[in-house]
Length: 490
Image (cartoon, rainbow, N blue to C red):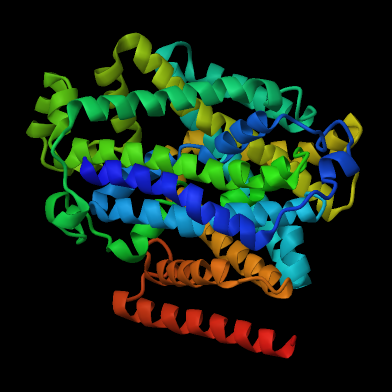
């Protein structure tokens, strides 16, 4: 538990110290923001800063810092270091600089920023890639919450329909009508869940593996985990450490800010808050899997069922959603577990709705179509909804197949993070600012995504050592290209 406590403190200090440094590097000022200059009462609307923070937090959270952190802790206490250092020096910097760049460029999206700083070919590739990611995330975050909600009340398909109707509303309606009003309530539910779980952890004070006990692959020793820590841990825990998905959501909030000085609490602060969520659930996972917590929270029947079977290991028998529902019910009782589960449900629903809205905004930028009238928004939204419904139907018919697809989505998220950090590095270099702020995490994430692409059994499945060598060469080549570009622009 001491590692958990120190990690929470480290995140707070990271926000106060490194967050201020990142803010100083970027240099926010008092210039007029897009929300004022381009106000259209649909996407460009000034909102109160606390609402923007809540929306940003929920948009980037999803189930990533919950499910990802649970699975990431399977590798052992090294997950603490990735969440803390990844969040402070990578993820929060990534979110802040990219969000502020969007704010400086009329609230434009990641693909447009990429085009401005990496060229038109990169822009076209990012338009296609981010559109694919947004629709996949939106479809995935329909079915998962529906499964959880049907366990509380109602039928699964009923919830699928209700959630999708909600997605249509969030995509089509002005941002202050649905998102601006509903998200704060969802945020309270999410924050209640996190605070309640943290309080129980501090009350229980379970004896858990600490960082100083060793940073080796504890999951390989105790849980039969097959994957190596590098690069698997750094893809498994994306949200809560570093996630390129966030760069697709920040422009939505950049269009609602009345001052650039709101950037640090909104962009950097929301990421730090997400890191806290990841730490809480990573610690719960450590308790569940490494401290035999599953025996304390599961019913005697479930314990007996697991004991009687030999086909599946502990992490195969208890997947991340099962851990969430079991822990919530055991620790918080009926009323508390319902509220906590709503917090878990709220995150993916809000993220899914925002993903469809982001897809509409990407298309509007790509085709230069104004979104001030409902007909124009519907024109762009219909193909997005059609593809989303098709993917949802496929997921319902092939629930196990989508888990494989989701591994590619997790890798794609980290690929977007690497691209975003390179975009930020070029921007800072052009502005004659300390570009190492984003260049160092850009190099690290490039190494991660290339190595995972080569080594992962679901992608190329190359030898581990060979993959690492090739990834190092590609990363070195990217750095060399950046250095030559910088020399040529002097």
